[in-house]
Length: 162
Image: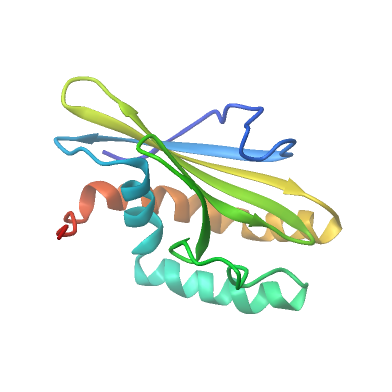
C-alpha cells in the first residue's frame, strides 16, 4: 500500500501553536511494531536519494543559520533527530531553532483485520522570515520524502532483534 495524505489534527500537544502541519498514514498488514520501532525504521534508514537531499539541506540550511544537525547535548537520536518522547503508541522527534521549531510525531494504532495504521505528522512553528523561506523551499521535497519514508516500512525487512 502507498501512504496517503490526511488532515493533521491540531492543536497538538507536542508543538503548541504550529502554523503549518501535514500528516501521512500507511496501512501495514501482517506485522506489529511500536511507534519507536516505526520511527527508527522510517527515519533511520532512508533511501540514498533522501540521504543526499538531506545532506544538501544541511549544507544550505547552515547558510541561513538553521541547525544542520541535532543539538550536541542530545544522546537519544532517531535518524538525525533528537528523540523527545517514545512509548508503544507514539514517538516524537524534533527540536527548536532560531528560525523555526519542528516535531515529527510517529504514531501507531490498530487497523482493520490484521493491520496497523502508522501515521507521521510533521508540525512546524515558523518564527520569522527565514523560517518561512526555509519551509517554502523544502516543501516540494518534504512532500516526496515523507511518503517514501513511510512506504519503506512495508518494503523493508524487519531488523533482527537480539
